[in-house]
Length: 57
Image 1 (tube, rainbow, N blue to C red):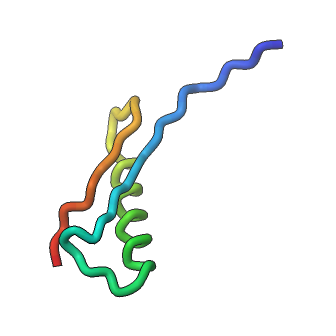
Image 2: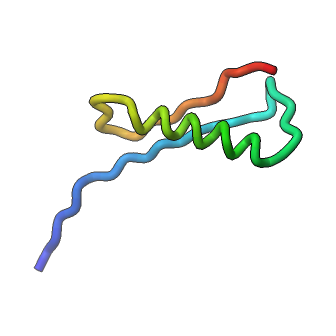
């Protein structure tokens, strides 16, 4: 028996130290989680998405 599954999407959050000085790894995790949550809320998204953080200190 062949089973079919719906296509999945991938959300990638990019948090770099290009513009922000991180003093603890938890700061990176928090920013990445915030971006990922934002990507998941985009309406009408039918494909994978990525977003690079552009915040500055």
